[in-house]
Amino acid sequence: MTGENDFVGYAYNEKHAEGVWTGDRLAIRRSLERCRLAVVTVGLAERWEDSQTGGVFWMGVPEAVFDPGRHRLRVATPAEITADLAEIARLLPCPACFVLCPVPLNATFTARPAITANA
Figure 1: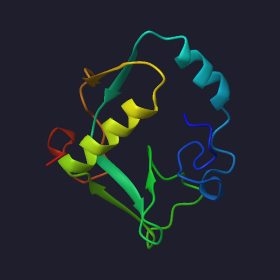
Figure 2 (figure 1 turned 30 degrees about the vertical axis):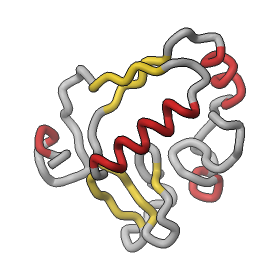
Figure 3 (figure 1 turned 180 degrees about the vertical axis):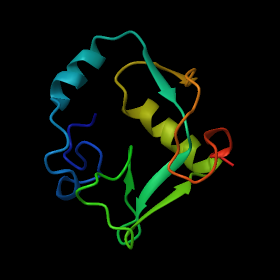
């Protein structure tokens, strides 16, 4: 969104995301600039982190770079989620409406049922 190349695709930096993201970020930005409202759908509070850098992956760790000794899964805190949503709203060039995913949650990276994965 910012035009900075601090992350690409599924990762927070290009080293981890090489070959994953093929989208045109500038074209996406231009499209958002023409919007009157962006509807942002949120779901599970799970997040993958790099234990060496503290970086957070925005979806999941690409299989090609996954290292079980380095990448860890945890549930984000309410404060982290609030800060993340505020940052998304700040970066968007239009107003945002945040909604909870209406699709039944059927998958999680945890060993628990999806309905309790945020606990």
